[in-house]
Length: 42
Image (cartoon, rainbow, N blue to C red; front, side, top):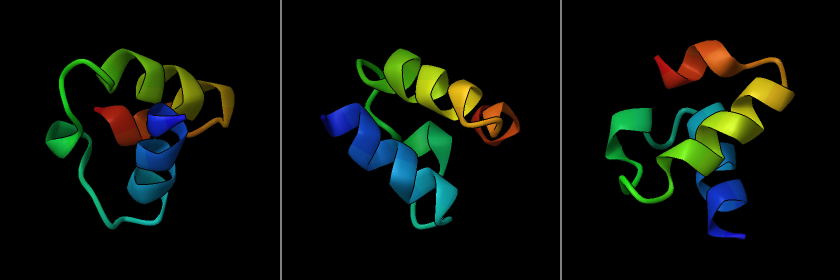
């Protein structure tokens, strides 16, 4: 749930991937990859 929240914030450019809590980064990266937006996690 929180990973999806942060993924949306990264997609909307409200939060940078490096600002996502470390424990949630793998889940957020998976969501971004599945959405074809994995480059946002670099």
